[in-house]
Amino acid sequence: MHKLDSPPDPALCARCHQEGHGCCQASAEGQANMFGLTLGEIALISEVSGLEPGQFSVADRATDEFLDFLDSIHPLFRQTMPGGRRRRLKLDQTFACVFLSARGCRLPAPARPLYCRLYPFWINPHGRLMVLRSERCLAQEGARSWREVMLRLGQDEANLRGLFAYLEELATEHEAAGGELNGPGFKVTP
Ligand code: SF4
Ligand code: SF4
Image (cartoon, rainbow, N blue to C red; front, top):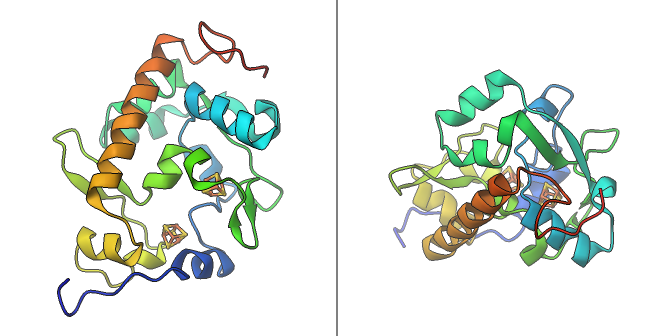
């Protein structure tokens, strides 16, 4: 580690949530800009939480502006929202994710949506690791490189690449099924 790099801070995300600007907290405007869940993620969350998909997710449409913006980051996003149809995490009356509690996410880490597990990292279409820039993310505050952000969050590149590869698989599967909850291979009740 570079001697100026910040060490991992296990309380960083909790602090960010307490300050009310963590990545699990949206806003009235921000809910238009949420990523779509894949069918595989919905099935896993449903199995682990014992909830029906309609209790933790909402079916709606992504705007053309949002989809155009996402196209500038990666084509995978369109696969998770075929034809603009999206199933996103449900928010409560404060626009927080329904799984968010005072102690963080209620879901065990392996059952969380992959973009939650990846955030704020992404892999660009050329295979390079990048950070989705946000002024609200405490892990990015004053950081000079994505490596520093990664260290602060206790992440590692191999794990992030593995998560992204899995998301690619699920996105392909989701698109092939037309994003339908009860499409071939997905016995999930909306
Ligand atoms: S599922 Fe968990 S990690 Fe993802 S937005 Fe909701 S509370 Fe946050
Ligand atoms: S990843 Fe960033 S935005 Fe999300 S809770 Fe952690 S510090 Fe906050």
